[in-house]
Image (cartoon, rainbow, N blue to C red; front, side):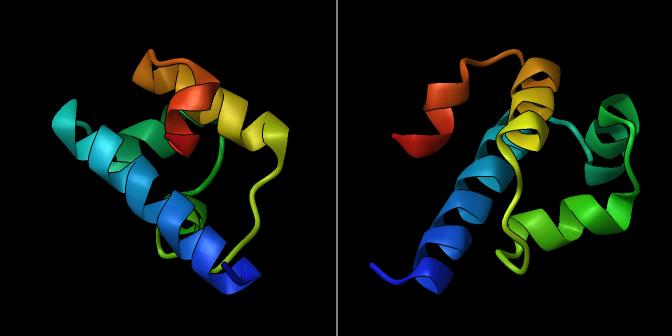
Length: 70
């Protein structure tokens, strides 16, 4: 798997988990303390989020960080 494929897969997983919870990108981004555009880029696989960023998102989604990688 290439880095680009990995980022797209991760982004899709985050989006899927977020939408299952019925949360908007705007809400998750606001709770994480960053702009909606950043959340959009993460879900689109256009950026490589830090572990700190992933941890913030996992806390808002109320899921273990490891869930992003299943």
